[in-house]
Image (tube, rainbow, N blue to C red; front, side, top):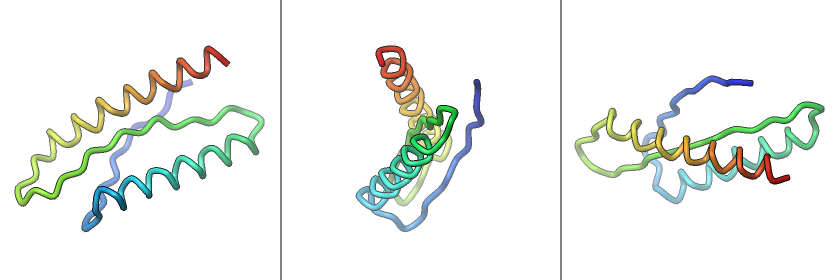
Length: 81
């Protein structure tokens, strides 16, 4: 089953705060998956910058690459389970 892709932009967050938000989202998804009769998974990728001039297309590309690596990890873990 396929899914949707979307972008969330967090402003005024440190890299550590961003990573904590991602950990919280993953924990919520894991909890929902445990409660569900159907498997639920979410692949995530993110990019962070504190640069004055942000190149949004570059950041999105970086996050997208990380998301596809996460998708691959999920698929490998699912097939080996």
